[in-house]
Amino acid sequence: MLNAGHAEGRDPAYAVVPSISSHQLLGGQRAVTIEHEGVQYVLRATRNGKLILTK
Figure 1 (cartoon, rainbow, N blue to C red):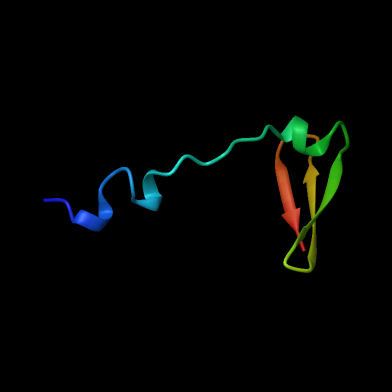
Figure 2 (cartoon, rainbow, N blue to C red):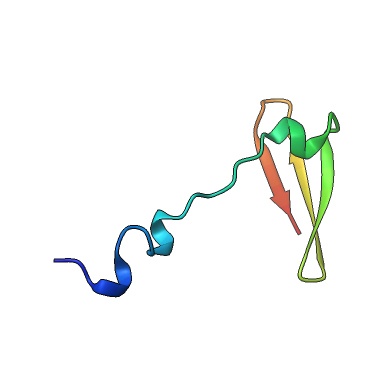
């Protein structure tokens, strides 16, 4: 039984999450700086194709 306030169309768990490729995000660089709530983070692509986010 569904709760009236949590029908599929209204539940945030069913919301579409935007997608961006790592190539678009990194823009051809090995690393980018991301600022979130005043804090700087570095997103790096490793030689093995992994992503690492550090503070």
